[in-house]
Image (cartoon, rainbow, N blue to C red; front, side):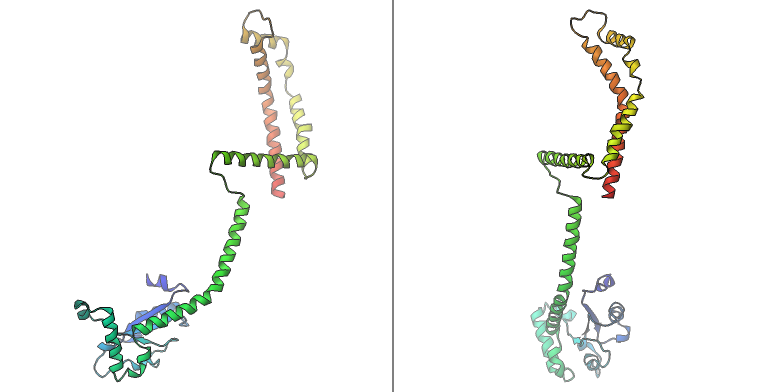
Length: 276
């Protein structure tokens, strides 16, 4: 879980290790070395300095001789469990930490760069430097992302209206644009108009001529349709229902060639759009 965070290049790593244990076995140092081999983001923090065995100290480590890091080690003295049980607050704990380093003969010369307060200030300064160094890259990334999104929005077209009136207006605008483009193809302003004209001048008329209208309009068929629609009754005017039935039967015959012509024109327009 820790690795998933410290692998990120913007993450500052606090490699915290207890002073009363061998740094060679420190998991914090080991993992930080793996994800940050140059040590650009790693700060070593040494805890439990006050709990080291009698006669030993962490001066070599804190001065960078025992285990060198790019940034100096910082020693801290935290509250013990007894202090927590006694409800010793953080202000008192920081005061005791300063007193410990100032009164210790081993660490007195390092007092200015020891303690939790110094660690906090050092990390704040480093974070400020990191932020400043990252700002140009972030600005470039933001500018690039905005440009890509604007290109995508332009490709998608205008926003879709939410209300019914807006949707109707948008549909009408699309229809007008299509109508104008279609006219330009037919007029020769755009290429491909000759193929569309060929459908209406050759393909569609040829298909209509192949229809057997003579059977539909024969006197026998006309008489049959009128009789079925209006029955055997005298008409003062033309038998409307019969004529309607006759026209409808003719339109059904024309439907096939008409749909084929529409499909042909659609295919031509589709090819023209892909080429443009």
